[in-house]
Image (cartoon, rainbow, N blue to C red; front, side, top):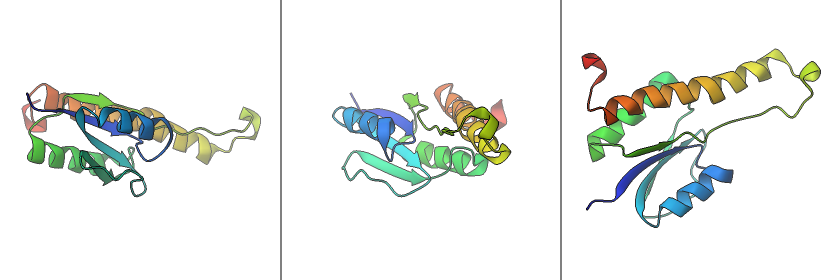
Amino acid sequence: MDKKIIVITGSRKGIGKYLSEYYLKSALVIGCSRKDSSIREENYIHYNVDVSDEIGVVNMIKDVVKRFKRVDILINNAGIAAMNHIMLTPMDAATDIIKTNLLGTFIFIREVSKVMAGKSGEEL
């Protein structure tokens, strides 16, 4: 049986990096982050993409499907936080949090679910 194809967002550091390293033992891991990868492994492929960049995510998933024909597992790990009291958090920080944590998750779920259901965007 072929290795599972796992997409993990926010894979450059923290929990995403640890998840990627863990799953590399038994799967092909496709990670993404806004910056270059910190993982150098044979079974790891990295895309420099911001999860809230709809066009970037769509193009990433299209490339994954072109290369591997499927995605078996999606782990939406990317996330940001503002370590300020809410009264001190600027609106642009709140907007960035929503774009990454909510919209980025939505975009990845939408695009990968199409692949998992065997549909292209035009068919839905």
